[in-house]
Amino acid sequence: MKVVVIGHGSTGWTAATTLRAWDRKCEITVIDMKNYDVYHPCAMPYVIGGLFEDETAIIEKLNYERMKINFLRKHKATKIDRENRIVKAISLETNEEVDLEYDYVIIATGSKAKLPPIEGIREGKNVYALKWIEDSEKIRKAAENAKNVVVIGASAIGLEVATELAHRGIDTKVLVRSRIMRLLVDPDYGEIIVKLLEERLPKLKFLLGINAQKLVLNDEGYVTKVITTEGEELETDLVIAAAGVAPEVTLAKEAGLEIGETGAIVTDEELRTSDKNILAIGDCAETLHLVSKKPVNSALATCGVRMSRVAAMTIAKPGTLKFPGTLNNFIVPYIDIRVGSVGLTETAAKELGFETASAKIKTFDKPHYMPDKTDFYFKLIVDKQTDKILGAQAIGSDYTITNLNIVALALQKEMTFQELLEADLSYAPAVNETIYPVTQALEFIARKVLRKR
Image 1: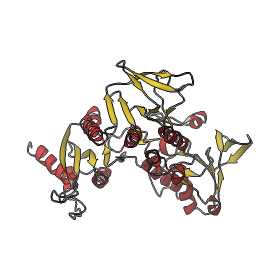
Image 2 (image 1 turned 90 degrees about the vertical axis):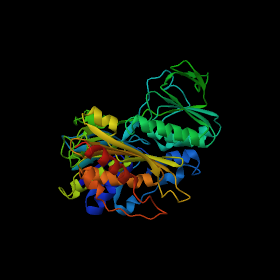
Image 3 (image 1 turned 45 degrees about the vertical axis):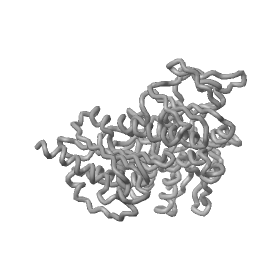
């Protein structure tokens, strides 16, 4: 059996190695444009912030020779010939063309950074969108001599870069057209995040309800000023474009594969596309949101890695694993606080027609008498009609991930808030609060909802 994997980020890597673990005999070929094996994109902000000396710390070398995986580095896949079952590729060094026969193709082409339609943004030599390891290197080096930075957009990774630059002592302004992390947290929690970050980082300033209208370039092509929609002129040494990403589906479109309403490749529970011999995983693939039951394109590495495992098993052991969809279980660190969400926000739930009840609490991550306790914010959303949990948001310490993962498991099992209240959870004063924040929120919801029945 011959399998061709197109793309080698976290998803392509996981798919290839999982397939090899289950099938020792199949012929696996990976096509990737990079000249190195794999890197960890989620760690790039830490390099920019100075935790690591440079990007080599987050690049890994894989022993594909030992695994007998044919790795075509610095190659670009140019066509999927479905009729003849051939993937065409070209060497980026020699222009030599390669034809690869296949029984299955796994498309893991990922995503590409979006640039907002602002005058001067594409021409500016010091405008960066953090997507590739090369972008991280450019931002890190530019930051060494920067005094002012403007971040356009308030995506999660954009805020990571902003906080890391501000933590380095650079005056950093974030232009927020509507609100921060719009798809991940509700407006009330967005306001809390802004307040906490500005308190912690004197060099960080959010300009809410303001966008960039024009970038002013000097004679060398570098942006020196950002003109806002309010007419204010912001001096800057570099600009970070943080408008999110879009699925990279060029190859899939040209091959005639079905593209969904999210702009990503339509897949089923086995990650098969409209062609049963071609699978798609990660940022380029469309799947189902487990709560809304609507198509979603999740750009989270955790979702992509889970997809990769299922795709590999679809080829090696068909029917063994299914991919039912995603909850977009998400967490991001901003200096010493963690922000996360899972399932639906209350805003999204109401837009979808749910009649919601929510509980918001402010507590501690450890008992009040512990000297190292820190503030912890938790929000839980449920459906009044069915009592089923819809989602949660949290702001606080590393304890954030524990509470969100509890909710994630409950969401996957479509549990009601009464059922989750029965969960048996561990406790020690040096580790966590006696009554978990999620449990406190569940008790609040119970009083709020059940008293009216």
